[in-house]
Length: 192
Image 1 (spheres, rainbow, N blue to C red):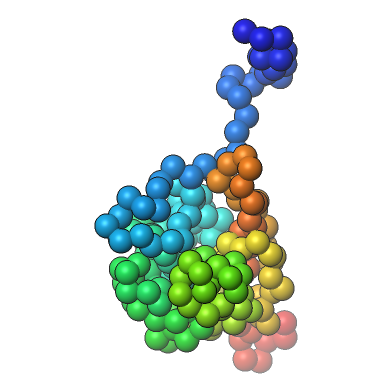
Image 2 (cartoon, one colour):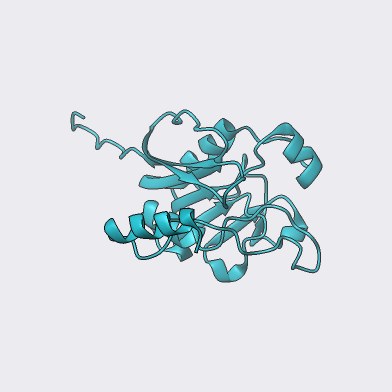
């Protein structure tokens, strides 16, 4: 064992750490293991972790810009691209759903104009537009999570409840998973 490895091992033992520290989320799926390449994927295990932050079972999450998310990952998958095999083929800025009908929403849009055009063959959906539509379909008290390189401003009627760092490993860009909560509607005749 090298001196550096010895030092790290000794430091880990004295601090009660039994294994090396690693980022919480690592990608382990290859975007090309499906018959037709479809870009856009969460790190392995991320949906389960995010569901806890959204306070929702995975089966009750609306996934907007779902990319490679599979039917076994739970929830309703919305994507513009047919090759992503979504449950609902639609633009995340104009969802074919009624107001306040979902418990939670996860959004994983292209992160830039270039990503949208080069990787997905679409125009860039601004986070503010996706969030406004998510706010329309999520029920009062429901949560919305968006994975992006930026932390968006809260849409009207929502507040930020968490911002979590997400990485797929060393040497990769870090992204923010921002969680918003839709404020409760006020009852008529009751002061807020």
